[in-house]
Image: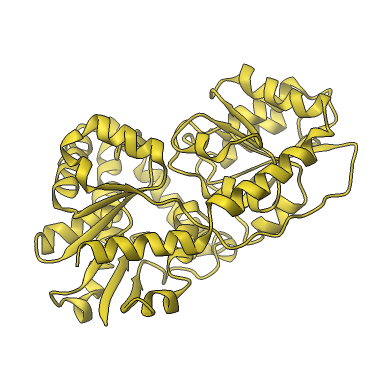
Length: 382
């Protein structure tokens, strides 16, 4: 049996798309064993097992306070990035792989932090697969970090090292793969697309209600851009609608303050981080995501599994989630409002579009297809 080790600097118990992906990939070890592969997972999963509980802890509050203080100065930002992101989160999983450092092991690297530390220590010694959870530009999700010259220089060097060292580069959407090839044609032969697969969903038939309920799920941050959906609700506040914002994050307080200052308390609800995402989705009618950048949003796939129509901005692989089941829009207020109005004026279309979401989900995003794709990738570099 050949060892395959999945490495991630994230906590796979977190309520993020990347963490959900990790849990799904390692959820069927017997499928790997049937192909002669022993799958192991190493991540930073010791800090919490339940994110919802963790966010209410004193430890989390102190950690956030330190991060906020460091984020106020250039020196502090660099300390936070290099000491915490790179040298702690990125290095810790690498220090745990001693049992698997034999020549036949294949390593699957889930993010740039762990990949940088891996290649710095083991470059050229093992077969590796690197996963690009982005729109095809590795640095596109790191715009905040790229503002600092020293960090920007490091990230560019990090990108060069990873692209040069990885045996296979996996993308979560065909659009992301094409975008990458346009930027780095020299690495085209290393690339392939494997859609993120999901567990079989359960189509929920919702009771008809006069209130049309929109929901958005994800870390509340500038990249996910939830404030745009909230501003659209503000423009449509005379309509009988509601928005639920699911998730915690650095922009949560700002969004809550905006809702309070604009008297939108009855229109916009916040759940914070929750382990009950599936249940929240089933209680709503339409999924909306107003992101500025994405890979392939797992939250949108979960919404498809629950039978919700989708409103997605045209970033990353979002277009590949739409086929008669919703709208792909620009991340501008006018487009968000118009897509919402469609369902407000034609509520009978919600069920129709939801059925199409559910069927597309089952035909394109089966978990078994994703796992088999990674197994084939590992065997291709045996």
